[in-house]
Amino acid sequence: MNLKEIAQAAGVSQSTVTMVLHDRKGVGAATKERVGAMLEANGYTIKRQAPAISSPEPKKVIFIKYKRHSLMVDGNPEYISRLMDEVEQCCNKAGYELVFKVANAETLPDVFEKVNNEPFEGSILLGTEFSNEDRPLLKDVRKPIVIIDNDLVKLSVTSVSTHTWNSMRGKVEYLLRRGHKRIGYIRNARPTSICTECFRGYLNAMESYGLQAHDEYVYDVEPTFDGAYKSMKKLLAQGIDLPSALVSNSDCLALGAMKALQEYGIRVPKNVSIIGGDNIASCTMHSPQLTTCDAHPCEIGKWAVKLLQEQIENPAGPVIRLRVETTIIERESVCDYSDCIPFQK
Image 1 (cartoon, helix red, strand yellow):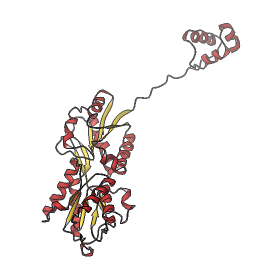
Image 2 (image 1 turned 90 degrees about the vertical axis):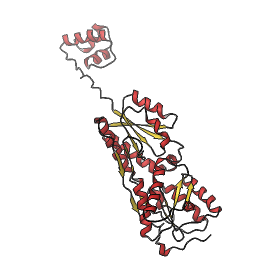
Image 3 (image 1 turned 120 degrees about the vertical axis):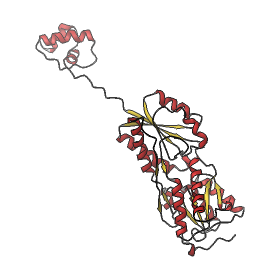
Image 4 (image 1 turned 135 degrees about the vertical axis):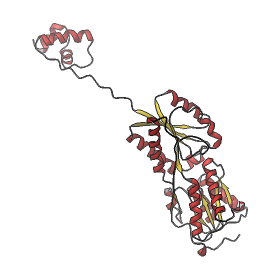
């Protein structure tokens, strides 16, 4: 019997017979068994398909973008994006699916509860805006975690960040080599623990070289480019005095302050030298181009994934606190003190 005759004998369409012959889906089990027996009885070999091998579910890691006030995280998007992109690339290479989640102090415990109860291997927490007051939020973490962009020195938790203390010390030493001794500080008016550590590094460096860190040379500004610009404009309108050089742990703060100084008629670096702290692309889009430090966000992202993977594979391993040293990037916003003309109010 040919296929048409088998179809007539079985009381089904010829297409149904063809589907059974090729072991395709869409035919009921009873019909499939009956038609299959008739095909084999007439010398046909059913082309049985190999059972589908279900691919294993990818292992998942969650990246938590923590926002306390969002000004530093959203106000410095380039640096944060470079961190996140590197984490995602390294997770993909390691075979992890990366899930992104935004959280604040109110929602972070719920996120950790989700991580604890669902098939996540671990988490990477962006700690840029994490402060010492937020430490209790970590008490319910039960799976591997790495915190990046904040070393949280008072917590026994694995972290990867820039060595903020050494970075600030390096900036002060750089300015000293250029002849500056009156060195001021552009400070985040909404400090996180990492901002506090930066400022302590500045104070320590000044003290260790026998220099006085004058309170009147510390300028509190809002932690965004626009916020720093407006804050510095207000300070200048109040008639503040200025040192010969200023340091900051953020390019956004340094660039915003520099714009306000220039609008006020203060020349950078002729009247005041400025050095920033992230090496974002905007540093080269201003005049003068900003001297800064490369904080190596891609290295931070890469090591965060490595350390998380080590924790996943060896949960009993030690807590590791890795600090990445920064590199001075010389551009145009710093001059030698011998070439400086101090600003006169």
